[in-house]
Structure formats: structure tokens, C-alpha cells
Image (cartoon, rainbow, N blue to C red; front, side, top):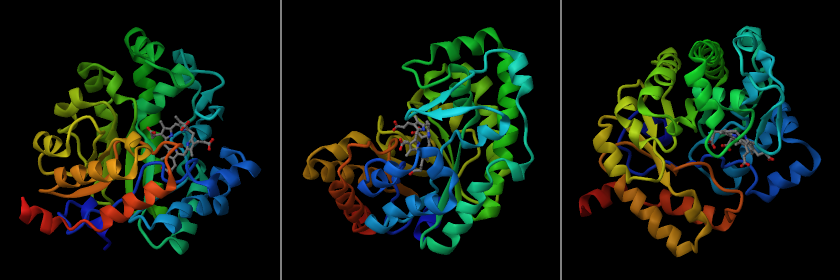
Length: 340
Ligand code: CP3
């Protein structure tokens, strides 16, 4: 076992393992250098390049886990969806009708993203730490498919759920089936844990989350039970905690809005991941370090995987990231707990 897998399995470890969402990518000069030669899609779809990008932050900072380099949108291509990255995902032909939902393919597992199986195989040989596989939660994938691109409030998507609930449920059913196949194949290919990203869960009212998100998250998580630790990220979801507390998972990844000590009270018996505000990496090093220590202290009293409350920003300075990783890896949780 590893420190990361111990904590991801619910163990209250002596120090908190650390990895950062989006640790591979644009804040690294070595990634930007590759981007001059290749598009984002080419990096994702060429396993040797995707292995290289996944390894860049591990080599530079020595995190306790890697996250495979891909995107939540990648499996959707095999369903027949055209996706472009500018740099966020853009859907050429957004899904707005039942006929379009019916036209979506539910591919055989092997066809979903063969380059991801090869990426995970390559990391199995090269990567010294566990690799986190991931997928978008069905509702978050549907958000992009219907809205067509990123948006401030996803009003069109929220309106779609209310005005075409049958098409919405049919779309979520297909996405759930593909996601179940996709994440289980990632585990077969070497992923040591799976994180489900529900980045836009928080925009919905609680009753809408219960009808449109919770059932699909539950099905995906149940399909992984007993295989690998399951991590669930839902940004801006404080109002959804009573619903999330009922879903099956080993670890909940909290955003920065409330301290981990609070999250632990509301979701007892769960590992927690998080939850430094990503903007704090842009602050002076001493400010960042003081905030990181607050997060570490707040995470005491149960399993804690140190991470950000959401993805790292492209403006993040690698020097600060290095200091953050060193600080977390040097923080003795047993001693801190004894000091109270
Ligand atoms: O290091 C890692 O964490 C692995 C790589 C990873 C990417 N996307 C690479 C990427 C992961 C885990 C994702 C997940 C993802 N993608 C999510 C969920 C996480 C979250 O942030 O909520 C979402 C919502 C997406 C959709 C997406 N893809 C967006 C919004 C963008 C634009 C990002 C931005 O920062 O502007 C992308 C493109 C993308 N995905 C990039 C990277 C490195 C930037 C592409 C580039 O280099 O131009």
C-alpha cells in the first residue's frame, strides 16, 4: 500500500498525502513547451505524450499521487459527440432534443478511449506513485453537452432539465452507462483510485440534485464498490451535503468554502480531500503557508488527502507549489493532534 491509498481507504495517516487537481497542465513551463508543438487533444490521445505530461508534476514536486492526463470530456467522442477545446470544451452540436439523445451511441467498453488504457498501462511502468483515474459525473457531462460550452450560470441547461425532464433522464442514463464502463476499464488498466468530478453540481437546487444527479452518481460509485477507493468532488455544494452524505464513496473532496472540520461533522466516517482555496497559491509564500497549515489542522481527526478546493490556476507559481508540497509532506499529524 502507499500513503495515498491508505488515506483514500479511510486511514487516519501520520502525514497527509498530497496531490493537486490539474497538477499537470498550464502552470508548468514544461507543459506549455509541449503545447507549442501539439494541441490539447493530441496530448490526450498520444499515450507517450500523455504519460510525459502526467509525470511532469511528479518529477518536479514529488506528489504522493499522479492524476492521469486526460479530460472529463474525452469519453464523449466515442458516443458520437464532436468536441473542441478553446481552451474549455465546446460542443459543435449541443444536445437539445430527445431525438439527439436517441442518436447518441453507447459504445462497447473497448472503444470508449483506447488511448486512456494505453496511458494507464504506460504509467504502470513509469510512475512511482498511485495513479488517480477519473471521469466527469453524468450531470456535469450533461451540463456541457446541453449548454454547448462553459457558462456563468448554465441557465439554458437548468431550463432544459425543467422543460424536457424525459430527455434529460434519457441523456443521464446513457452517460451513466458509458461512465460505468469507462471507469471500470480504467481500473482494469491500472488506475488505483477513481475520482468523479461533479464540477457543476452546486448550481442546482437540492430537489433537482436528488432527481438528476444523485441516482447516477450512486450507480457509478456502486459499480466500483470494493475495487478501488472512490472520490467525489462537488464544487459549491454545501446545500447538497445532506444528499451527498447518503451516497457511496470513500472520500469526499470539499471545496474551500467551509473548513474540513465542519465537513467532517456533516459527513462523518468519510475520508476528506481538500481544500485550500486555489487562489491562495497566487499569494505570497508566507500567506499560502499559513493557510495550508490551517487546512492541515482542520483535517485532523480522520483520513485526509491534502488537495485544493478546485483545480490549480494557470497563474500558480511553481515555486509556491513546491513549497506547498514540502510543507504538507513535512507536517506531522500525530504531533499536531497531540498539541491540540
Ligand atoms: O492534472 C490533472 O488534473 C489532469 C488533467 C485534467 C484536465 N481536465 C486537463 C485539462 C482533469 C482532471 C480535467 C478535468 C476537467 N475538465 C474538469 C473537472 C475538474 C474541474 O476543474 O472542475 C472539467 C470541468 C473539465 C472541462 C475543461 N477542460 C475545462 C473547463 C477546460 C478549460 C480549462 C481552463 O483552465 O481554461 C478544459 C481544458 C483542459 N483540460 C486543459 C487541461 C490541461 C487546458 C487545455 C490547454 O492546455 O489549453
